[in-house]
Amino acid sequence: MSTYEQILEAAFKEFAELGYEKASLSLIANKVGISKPALYHHFTSKDALFETLYDAIILEIINGFHTDLESWTMETYVENLTEAGLGDIHYLKEHPQLGSILKQYHLLSMRQEGLKQKTQYLEEKTFSYHQRLINRGVVLGFFQKEEAKFIAEVFNSQLAGISWGIIVRPTGSYELSWQIFMSKLLNHKK
Image 1 (cartoon, one colour):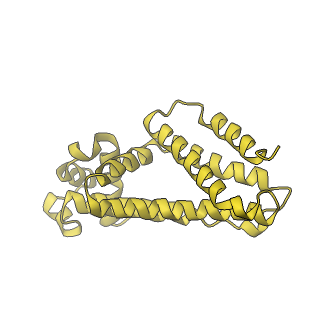
Image 2: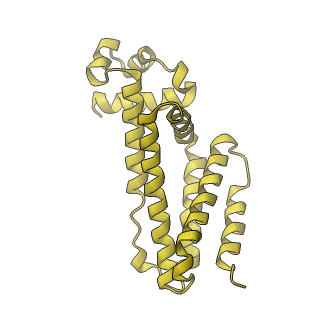
């Protein structure tokens, strides 16, 4: 692993455990086994390091949005759509440090316009992915075309709410909440 990658890994742990305000470049450099000036060779500031770390997280999340929707059939759609949300829920529960970083970045983005744009970009990409999932349901006859955008917004909002719940209170019954929501969503015409 390169020094750059080691710095990102150490920074991830440091920011997740201590928070942005308490994390220091000195501590991160010590964990990597380099001097603070050597760390500055890679990152000009704590802000730059945190932003680079967030960029890497965004990229990893977006890369997970590549689902072969053509393989989703009438028989598999309900299970696949439910599992798409459950997969996100399980991932956040299994990686609480990721949730900590996302929460910190979200809170910082409320104060800094440049950071806000990256958060909005991630939200737009996430919604676009969820819209594709719902549009597949339109093709398969689960939803009407004219209601697809609304359903995608509800789907996206529900999953975002559950995700935020996991980040701030990881012990909730989020899987059950998601399954109840999906049952209601998929039976909304009855």
